Image (cartoon, rainbow over all chains, first blue to last red; front, side, top):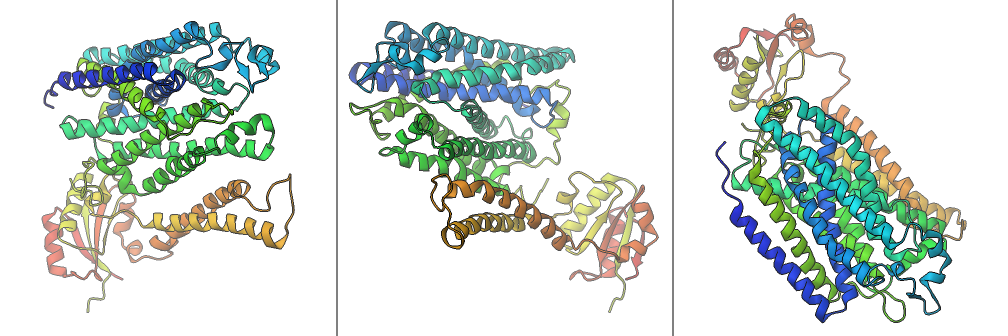
Length: 420
Length: 176
């Protein structure tokens, strides 16, 4: 294995792109409706947080199940979760906003916000019942706790894995297994409450027990989609030639395929139960999302988030060859962003309490924020990349992973024939 | 006309068998098989086997199951026995979905298992290889390649040469 080429120039490019994206978003605050820009920024932070949360979960599931095949890919996820500290820094403007201008993003933070032109949040019994949970102190403390959990778990997993590269001690594997045993429930709680506080509480009258699971499904799909992108990049760059084979890629995409179905199951269940029960305090959330072009966004999610990747990935070749797997993964990453927009942006209402359309200037701010936050996260990944070996070379499972079934390259012509 | 089933050659180790399979594959034979006492990873690729056609049966079964569920519920609600339940429409894909989804899984499972039996012709109560004395050791500690007489490229002399060169031992013809 030759020494990997330096990633520093690429990292700098992403840093510049990230800062430019953030600058455009900041400019948006001055020239456009700050509410729309802030929610667009929230979508972007949630999107990249989902990627990192998914990667963190994948590392821990790898350890808790003592998996073999994923050892070669796990290292890249360990670099990926280095982004949590930057995501926290990028979340600080939102935290600053709730203290400087409460009610701009989450309406319940300002009890004088008027609802339906009749009464205020402070007079709303549905808010008062939830006030011990939905208040600024809780929101701030919980958000700091989420990031604390994520940063701490990532640091433990990274330290143990990177240390094992140099001394090969088995204790690091056991440490990671223990971290995962308590880390999985902690992460599950953190991501569920994050979804509830950051997104669901935008319309705090609404409730759904599937919401945390819905966000979890998106996190896993986002983590694996970006995982395939990283795999493709490392393969094209040459690092993964002779390391990554058809079967490891097939396992990764097959797991991602399972989560296509899982996402559909959870999302359909949420819709179906609300549709079937048909009680106004739940259905209003979907009624808003059938208004204007949001109906078509919903249809896009139904077909684009489920049917398109489902049908595409039924085919073995689309899972086991890199380029088709990359195409499906990029599509999934894009549609997850649409899903987050669908959950967040209809909280923007016009004077008649109707949601502002999907196709609007807000998409520009979403795009700028996604590039902004994504540039910083990718820069963090690329900065972490040269600090450890390409694969965990002294992991007890590394040989099992490298020889995972027969080793064919994930390229056209290799997959069906199985040539060596 | 050759009345025998084919030619069998024995191999003592998995690498020998593996590389012999690659040679038989590269020589272009299509009607042949390897007999091993346990599954050998990567042997399907060394034998040049393509991926199974079972998924085609599965897909057909799944689509049939989904359409059966949707179709039955639509027929029942819209024409056979229209009944308003909970103020819901006579038919909606929403409430038909859980049932259709279950039937998708059920029919996929049936199509997969019966498609597999159809393609591999199991259960098979008799096969010429089973009465060969070598077969006992193929279930224990030895590895075999059988090239069948109905292979379009079948030529007893050429095959004996090929198998011998590939390291095959005890090369004999099998009765059909």
